[in-house]
Image (cartoon, rainbow, N blue to C red; front, side, top):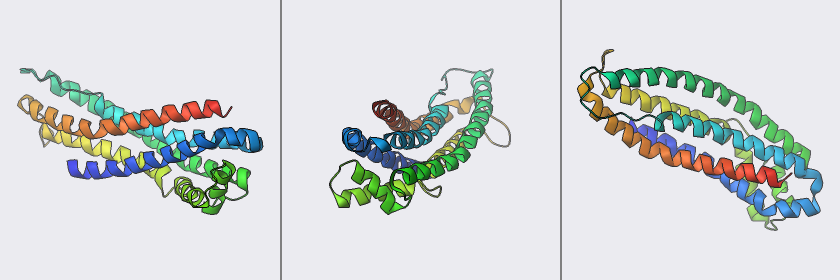
Length: 229
């Protein structure tokens, strides 16, 4: 299961990186837009905000796993088991809440396309490339590369909808694996807490970089949105 989760998190990382690449390109051209194309600034800012909503789901999903730690001690009364069980139940509620947000991301995808239409009159890869042309990048090849990335992000079968959904799948699998390490058949055993704690630590080492990347990207987007005011 750990290998499956690691592979899934690589897809999440790809989604985050695509959003960061788009954000950095827009940031590099924001002053040019303000001077040469102020009429598109509002839609550009709104489009960036939509991209950021995906990252918030990823950040919150990762925090569900990284916020729990076992206390390794002699636990004859099974207090750590009860604490994990309560946390596991609450995590399922948070997962469901976040999963509803991933459904909302399909709406965000369509909003990104709407803003692209408002800016360039097209919501395909060539239309998105025009956005980066308006940013003054002066590189048709680079503009098309970024246009294709944004095109993928703007459709629900790619990163905006899928990276958050994949993160939730990884979270569910990791917590279930830790639960199974504590016992099976509906039982959990205090003597298995150290094994489960080590497994949770292994998962945490994979989730934390995603969380840091998402937090960093969210902050970058927040600053960029403010600069596009």
